[in-house]
Image (tube, rainbow, N blue to C red; front, side, top):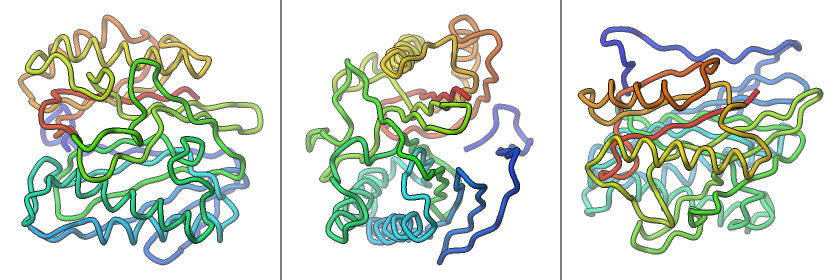
Length: 282
């Protein structure tokens, strides 16, 4: 994943008004205040072999971390996946292989009593799965002491109910999550693309895909009791640098003027998707 400005580094900083403490749990490095836990890990993946076993182990370790730390409710997760559209030695695309491992972890966590219902959206976070450079999957998460409310899109099939067309196990995430904090109720909208039902639409047309993705963001926000105009932070991922200015123009026209928008050139979770965006409301 690269910034829209070549040669520049990009940093994301989460700020807390309350004191923050460090926490190390296995392979996870974390920080937390009294209400929110933030953490990250790196999952090395073999050059050609399956990543599912390592992904399943990392997610299961995360579920144990949440229980042990007292922040059992997973709100939001970001998965940055190298070679996301490339096949492994068994011919399975990296993202589908990743989804297999993630689903296995949800099922194992259910068996161990770490989550209650592995296919219920109230136990699945909002999520992004996007391509990146390097040889490790980078996983970042936000969790809290209070449960979130997980939200779906009325014109999309819930990701955890996708048919086998999209891989041997479905993606395990909700379209959005709201969290409960003192004095605020942030909304996290997952990576959202040009998908209706469970199928990609407007294949090959980046302009139409961008409009469809923004329409989906608006529907999810409305289903969560918010609106496109209330969302304050956006990340926009564009597969091809040549499409960046077209996507930027549409986003400038349709997204709220006061919103902060960051643009990146990155591979998307399906090879026929040309762009994706995510959003947040403080």
